[in-house]
Length: 335
Ligand code: CP
Image (cartoon, rainbow, N blue to C red; front, side, top):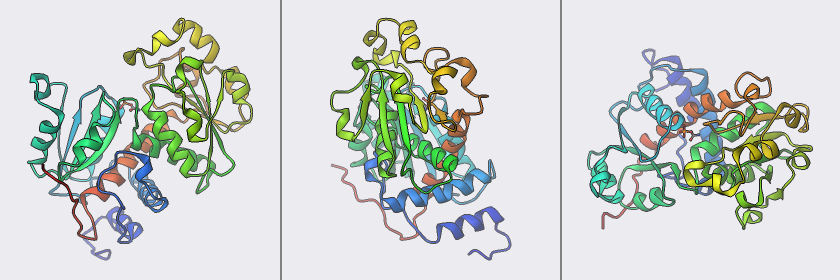
């Protein structure tokens, strides 16, 4: 297949790098599901997709994907949609205007979408656990695009790809990642800590006590209440938004006070290692989570690289889920 002269070079390269490999999973609801070989496969492909930018490829022609976003999104929804289109998938979007507003359950909604024989359904929900529950009932692969406070696995993948590419390494041994901000309500943190742990990195958290979950140490994390102390010796400063839509503003006296105590400023970034990078999943609340001057143009900021990597990771994942070499199909019950 690789020597087909009519096939674009990029497709040939992707097929060669994939080397007949398949993912070990049919749905992606948590980073916990991923083996080392899955992460390696997704990253190998994502780097090539990234180099190909918006090249139109026929890799998933004839397959369909639905974005079912029941919470707002800029990055995740648009990048899944564009990624699928670049792979020649047909796509549609349902969400806040769907029949769930008329009382239809999530399960009935997802089973309805599954009846279109789509290969992939990407779900974002305000409730934790929805993607995992519905995944048991449809033949389409379910991808969790953020469920409540739980996880956002493609974010964890794009974040760790961004770190590895910065450090030029295959894992995060000897690297320390500091997450600063609303850890308690953060599904991004839920996937970040699992992904960094899988790659042998160390994680610290710094936040007001009210914004740190009680059992965070179960992830092998060290907690700090002084951001200055926490920043000492870290390689990655990962800022998280105070999630006002989940009531987080009620966990701090005022956002101004939060920003004064935990916001990432140039001075604070300077307390990390000299070549440390600044990351944020977006959306950034400028001058609350991160000082405005650091967001996109600062040399240590990797925030826009995270966005670019998001597209590449999602292309790799969609291709793996929509086109398997082993011919296996997902087992599920429609009971
Ligand atoms: N990082 C992230 O999930 O951003 P969106 O809410 O814009 O998708």
